Length: 201
Image (cartoon, rainbow, N blue to C red; front, side, top):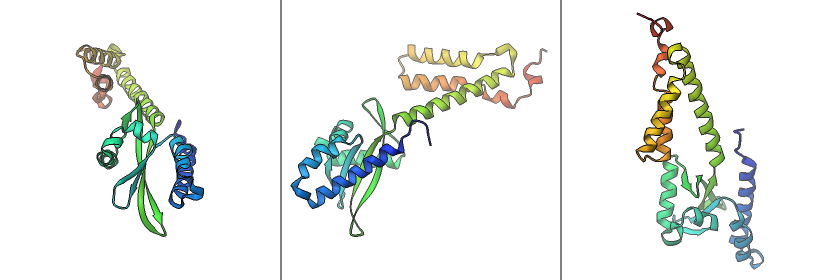
């Protein structure tokens, strides 16, 4: 199990979602609007419902908050979701990362439409990024350890690169990318003999 990635929450969400669609389809007890207010709009994930013609027919409040375009241009918003899925990318909104997932709605063994869920995977990606950064730091320390004259050199280069990027007005994302490149700029030293690296003449 990946730390911070709670699949139980996703299971509860899916169960709630299918309960909603049962209510919606059969209009059980005439509670369609009640279902929307107290079930689907309470789900933590964004939910977008598409019919078998590929038309957006419904979405919840969370989906509208993540993708405001749903309200005015639902098909364009759907196109964005499909594009993200095709490129295996996340949707950045509200300071979080949402992963789009597709579920097929079945009606008597016939596909009756699709449900797209926008799941908050922010913590999952944060843990992955933290692990990647720790691996880069470990590699940079391994490289620097081969040359006692330049111990800590890679981290200093990384810090200078990030600071220069900041002063140039680059985005935080670009600054962090340059920092990571700085950490690994001497990675080729790992394959060079210490006798050569530390040679004095």
